[in-house]
Amino acid sequence: MTPSSSGRDLRADARLNREQIIAAARELFAERGPDVPTEEVARRACVSTGTLYRRFPDRKALISAVALDGFHRVVAIARTAEDEEPDAWQALTRFVHQASTELRLATWLSVWFASTWADLQEDPENHRLRHILLKILDRLVHSAQSAGDMRPDADTGDLALLVALLLRPIPGLHTELSRRSAERALDLMLDSLRARDTNQQLPHQRITTADLEPGS
Image 1 (tube, helix red, strand yellow):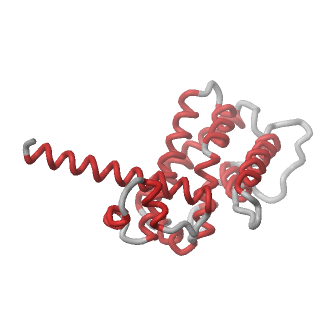
Image 2: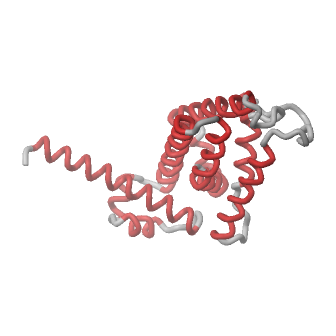
Image 3: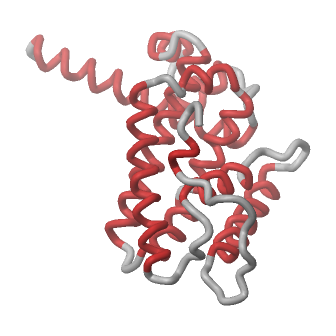
């Protein structure tokens, strides 16, 4: 083995270890909540605790990595839904259902680790991903309204906030019931956003993506 190929192997191993650790942390946070010991994450990832701490020197670094990984997944789901579905409403429906697991974990992380989450909001990569996602959702929402499929008195900010509220953790609710109730709530939300002659006018102005910007 040449020195250069040895270096590539080490980089590949390091990347694989990092991916395994993030995947294990995602699973354990979703299964057992915020108090999962770091040693348990290492065992699930099949790495030593020393390897874990070399990749993520503290819990904050691990949580931030899990959150950013989830954001990447959510953006990928939104892009694929927009590209593959025949109309905007079907793309929105697909996005909400397929991204619900990632969005639920992101919402839980924001509640469990509020200070870390606040710091993450200043991360340039987080800003980039958030901008991309909101642009995609804006296009889908407005296209669905133009097609007459989505009620005209709601906007992208309404959709985003509804999803975040519906996916917040409920104390004392076990994991399976939480998952089932979230899926039902999201379907009820989508049903309420469909355009119908019987829709009652919503109060106040529509909530847009501009309203979600810091300082708005």
